[in-house]
Amino acid sequence: MKILHEDSSQITLNLVTILVYGIWFIQIFLDPIDVLSFLPISIFEPVGFLRVIPVSVRPLLINSFFLTGLKFATLISLAFVILNILRNPASILACILITIYQGIVCGFAGRIHHYDLVLLYSAYFLALFPITDEIVKRYKQQVIEVKKNLYGIPLVATLSAICFTYTFVGIYRIVHGDIEVFASDTITYWAIRNSYLELNPTWGFGRFLLEYPLFEKILKLGFVIITIFEVLAPICLFWRWFRYTFLSIMIPFHFLSWIFLNIMFWENLLLFVLFFDIEGIVNRVKSRGSHYSIN
Image: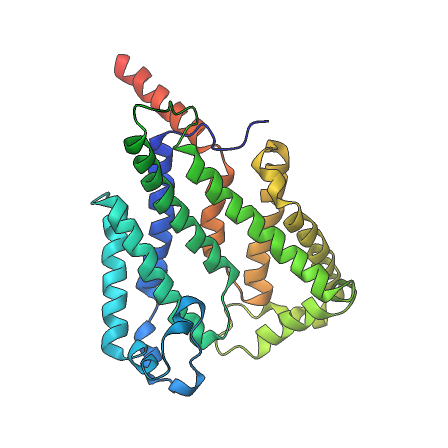
C-alpha cells in the first residue's frame, strides 16, 4: 500500500519546507507580540518547557526589548531556511525560537492552539529528519545501503501530523462532549456568540441562524459530518479518493467557520497542499518544460 509522498524527491521536500517555514514567517511577521509587554505579569502562565523558568525570571520574557528581539531573530532564522542559507542549522534555530515564541504567546492565551501544534511539529520534522539522515549516512556510509527514500520520510511525517491532529480533535470532541454536543445547540451558541460578542467580527453572519432555522439545521448536520471525517483523516495517507472527498468537505468547512464563527484557520488551508501529489505535479511540469526546450 503506497503512502502519499513516500516517493518524493528533494525538490518536493524543498517546496514543502518553504511552504511550512513561509507560513511561520507570515504568522510571526503579522503578530504584534510586543503588545504583550503591556499586560500584567500576573496573567502570564508559560506553557511547555518555559514552565521550568523561575518565577523571578519570567518578567524578562515579556519585556518589550526581549519580545522585539525574539521576533526579529525568529524572522531572520526563518528567512535563512526559506532562502536555503545554512538551512540545517537555521531550521533547528528557527524551531527553538518558534517554540519559545509560542510558549510566551500561549502563556497569555491560557492554552495551546492545535493548528499551531501542527505547524510546529511540521517544522521540527522538516528540520530534524534531513539532519539525522545526513548523520547516519556519514557515520555508516560504508556499512549500510540506504533502501528507503529519505526525502519522503519527513513529508510523510508532516502529512501524518496534519491528519492525526484532525483525528485527535474529533475524538476529543466525541469523548468529552458526548452525543449532547451534536444534539444540543452548542454550535449555534458559538456562532451567535462570536457574531455578537467579538470585538471585531469579520462577518457576523452567525446572527442569521436566529432568523433562518434552515441554516442552523445545515450547520448542525455539517458539524456531525465534519467530526466523522476528522476522525477518519489518516485514511488520506493511502487512499486517494477518500483524500479528495476529505478536501471537498474540509475546505468548505473552513470557509463556513470563517463566515459563521469568525474563525479562520488559514494555515490549515495552505497546508492542504500536502494532500495533493506534489511530486507528480513537479514531474509533469518538468516533463512539459523539457518538451518545450526540445522543440
